[in-house]
Length: 443
Image 1 (spheres, rainbow, N blue to C red):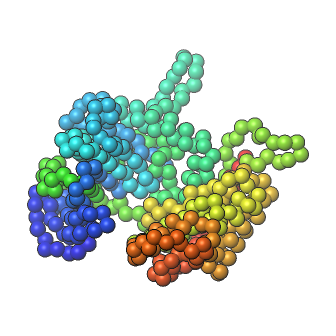
Image 2: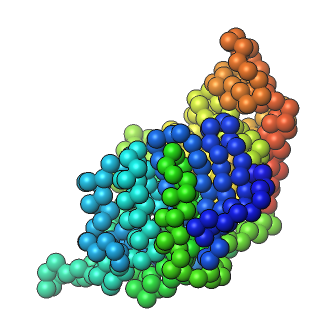
Image 3: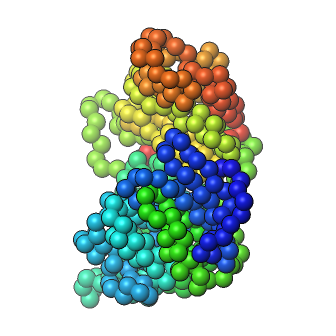
């Protein structure tokens, strides 16, 4: 953004303003003087109005405190003292989007509506919910965990909305593989924990810890606010200041540290519960899954981020993509495993592998992945069968459409700058002997 003369309105100081021609918007970046809350306000003619408030919520364990808190704050607040205002909004609001999400290091509360009065109502409910929730022991037990006894002589069992949700997640081998792949790369920092909550550790969380986590993290000094649409830009500031003005600035230490690099590759083996194997006579059960995972460097510029996303699409984004095709055509497994590029972490990760493999072929799969990526880095990526949309997506920012079909074979990416970034990106994946882990998982 372009720096602009500092001005203040409704407690907010305008730090920067810039025209964003690509989305026909004017972007204004503010900081709230009293609390330090940051606001990105996008002003345009789109009737789809959006608001969001997010907090940095890196966990220090796998009790799922951030996830349970995300559920709990939407169970009533100081102004809206009903049991489940979120459910009431779902039934009566004109919202086009209404949700809340817990990420590995942040929690987000976005809402959207085309009706301006409904939009303001949604904002009011959400701001009251996150800053002034009705966090009672009963809500904690309902949303987090509690004991249940179904019969006098029956054993006590755990129940709870988040506890049950995460039990479902942990019963999925694919979800478990993704979770374990991430943990394998970040054992020393917050990404080594499950922000959603591990059912084995959720019962370790106490009501007092939940309250303390809210007081520490759900404060305007730790908030990032966002507006988009055709609503009154000045009214945005007024609505926010009315809520934020009740707080004073505090210091919140919620930054995720960098994960130190490994001195050598690591190989981890985990197991998961599986049903009766569906195997033919004389053939081994193929229920093993494997991923090879790389931790990449922190991305601090937009062009590298674009290059990594483009590279992921080129490598595995379609059946004809070279790494996708090499893995499937090998016959070593039934389908791809791994989440590909996860760029929502401070240090992104790239994870790829196969599931439905014979345990004796684990080493072959790992070598195939490494050899394929090394070959592509050395020889370049010639895209004869890949989706031409890859090239178009890169070139459209620089060249007007000529109306002609792209050549049948071209080396991707198309522009020199992005090509350099992609080459650097693929090199960062292969040139990381100390920075990767493999996670075979099976019975």
